[in-house]
Length: 240
Image (cartoon, rainbow, N blue to C red):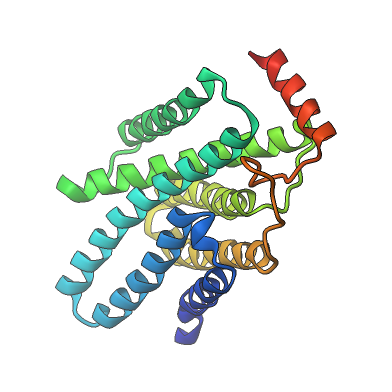
């Protein structure tokens, strides 16, 4: 049974090897850094799991790292998607707006549901929930954007957002239930987290299992034809 807890680490190693083979660090460097950090963090947690003080410190330090890298990855996704589609000034305001909304909702939730944590651990936990909200917002935005502009979904940044978006949605719902039911939900929450994250990593492996199609300058995502680009520009011009 304990073997099942190693599944996410094994999948992360496979993901990291896939990213290296596809040289994806040139396209999504922040996500590559996230994957490498995730492998190192899991190894550090497994190495210290028998020593409670060391494990506790390792856990919260790595959680803070996940918070920072999670935000950077979402910024990278939006920058690549919007940078390839529009140079409008308002596009630079989208990520700050999403970030503020995510932090605001996390802080509001912390006020409604009192936390048992205190000090730096409390702020790390609030940051984690904020990252989850940001990931859900970005994923929902891309789900809307793809059919609106007729973009191809199987692109690396979209794959990154899909994995994070689905995982974040499940974890936000699970965290809410955990708050409602307390320790009775703890075991189920743990397995839900493991399964959801494993599915997210499988999604990333699937998206990165094929090479990114060759793109024209400033069109890393869609490699669109001239007619497609004109259609995108016309749609975006109406949105200004």
